[in-house]
Image (cartoon, rainbow, N blue to C red; front, side, top):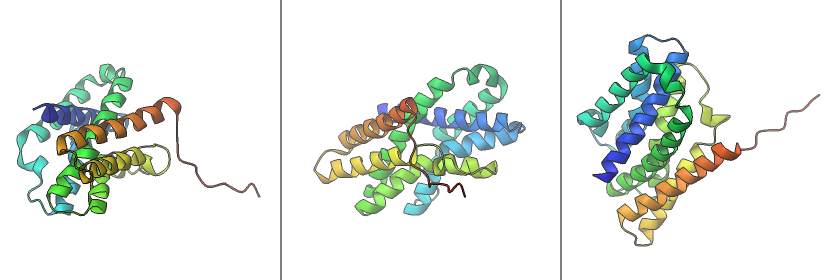
Length: 203
């Protein structure tokens, strides 16, 4: 139950961030909701497609999809108030990212994936929705040029796989992986960490 609640918290944060982008782009209510829902469930859908889980879990059960849709509608109508909670949304987004990275890795292992595949699929679960969001609004995905997001997600999924490899229970591995990923993400936001870019010649 606790895991499901935390997953829904992550869905709310992801959907809110996606819907806010839609509002900033002055999309109509359908566009805002589409962007919010894709951001919230896109990574999970990609994960399930890679693992051969059909139909994808987020589309086959109502809580995840409905939570994302309702959140997007609320943001559309109350976006001035929601925008003031941007810092809180970033914190919840970091927690959701860590949880999705870890749970994605656990689900991949349970489906028979190798350790390497589980690490990559876990990270994809966490970042996939954001990439789809940016592509839908015709922008370069933030994680490719500015935002330290993919690295924390990969750390979380890798730590989770390592925990299970060393004999820890899946639940404990989820906790350790989620805390690892979320902590790195929050530190990156706080300290404004970014990966180094290429040196640009002045000539």
